Length: 336
Image (cartoon, rainbow, N blue to C red; front, side):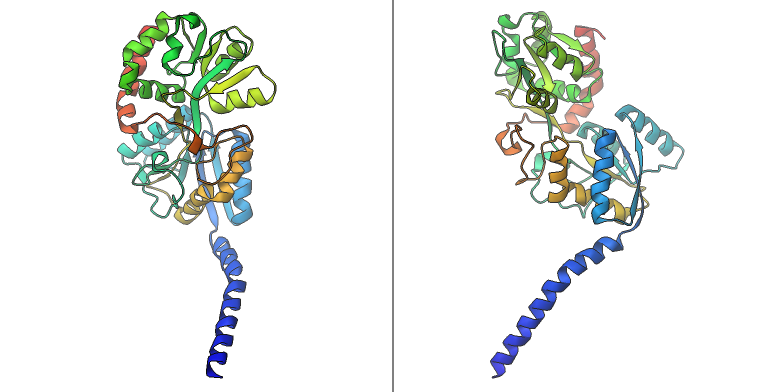
């Protein structure tokens, strides 16, 4: 009889807990309120969509956004820092090299409460000063009718591709600057001799990814160096292109998020960061056409999953140290 009473009480307690858990989650979300200031270089559509999804979970947080290109965002932020009045709580920018520079300048706060379980360590700073939110890779795009289709970075030097390769210039593209740094760190590619080989083989450096895609898609060039989503989206729309994962591996950016050490609205900022990293946030990012960073979340249709990709090692600190001299030397080889 006594055991039966204890069992009934346990069952009632479990049932009460089960009922209260969703209410507790709602209360937790409701407890986070007030403003949140975000500076970002994300496309306008992506920013608005992400905030709308976040507000479904945190309706009482009002996100104030400054959105522009990475250079303008950084110029605005540095001006505010110099004046002793930085405004953003969070910054969401294109690449980790930019974040590493801000970390070294002592402008960031480690996000100790950020949930990085299920996110590969290569996609975030080990001290959690910045954390990737998605994977945007750079590989090779080829025209489906090309006579020679390269399967590796090294094969872009093949004589069959003489005057047939286009690439974005690292002087104008952050992703291209990171690719350059990764190539220079790979002994198998031979450092600057690889870059000089591209020039000798007639490769051209253009201002942006769009020009690369256009030239490969219309058959003017057989191959190019391009970010994944542009090639895969073009293919899905019927363009005669394929995206190739080079044998040496892809280079990548992760569109990381970081919290300023001067953040005034830390609770709201932490909620936003954890939303971006959560399954809900990651699933939403796939609807925008991005490869998710969280294990177990399916990528957009036609995209490979991150675990199926091979990545080149990226030493963010080393790339940061070399980025300006590397850009200068690249400009000396290819012109500005």
